[in-house]
Length: 349
Ligand SMILES: Cc1cc2nc3c(=O)[nH]c(=O)nc-3n(C[C@H](O)[C@H](O)[C@H](O)COP(=O)(O)O)c2cc1C
Image (cartoon, rainbow, N blue to C red; front, side, top):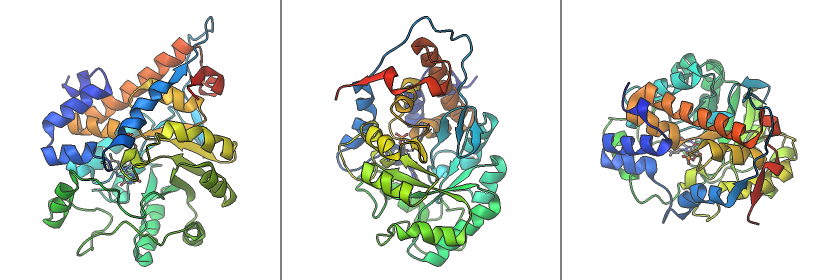
């Protein structure tokens, strides 16, 4: 067994990844905005949520399946879109997509993946596509067409990048590798010059624009307030992801686990609520589910696994989180995901 497969937790996979990656690439992966307070808050504030374990429940059988957007998932943990995975391992998204697919877990492919969406979807049928709009809407339309043509049933529009967050370390390494051709953007084979993924003019009209061009279900990734959650429901989206991009965009000093209750209350079950940013343990997954998420996504956790040991390393990250989730469900007396209700946690406020 490889070292990555022997890792006992996500932190050990992260440590292995840091040993194996070039320093600039490790910094890019670990990187976040400004002084990284939001990044730290994302993980630290899980500790402000306590679990109210129930006793004397039959937990011999644990069922972690969930239904999300009409899909039946064996685990409520999906893989968040992470761009340019060729930075972390030669097999890039093919390794992580395979790790996800062999476990029945949903992979969300980034618009700026190293491998093209067609190859990723072939490795993990049913994968969702994450869209960054480019200011050139003809390019955006082509991306949508490729994703739908590849078979993706869902498009997740990332809405928290009107401009790139202020990441002071690691980004130069990525840009250097793109400009000297060591790294490619698989969905943009003909692109010459710099690829722009920010469109500061994008507003709520983008949803109708997408609907006119694609019949994929639409999910908005990056919602952090009740106001925007309500607006998302009014616009008829299929789901939202409560996310602050892993602390890489605005230094908000608000962990997503703090944003989740107001968003879930505003949605009131009218669309799917996914959650990401800061998940490193199965107990974090449990707390997010208890505070209103229908499912969660993990980003760095599986990418550290990829960097530490390719497909097997990414698989180890997923197995660890799934096993930890099953363990806390048993310990807390919740044999099914539906039973992980608000009464299973207490928060400081
Ligand atoms: C290296 C890296 C690249 C990312 N690339 C993308 C991307 O291409 N599209 C996107 O919507 N989010 C991207 N994200 C954000 C993730 O989808 C997700 O929101 C975040 O990683 C969740 O936080 P976590 O890493 O603490 O789990 C990226 C995150 C990281 C760490």
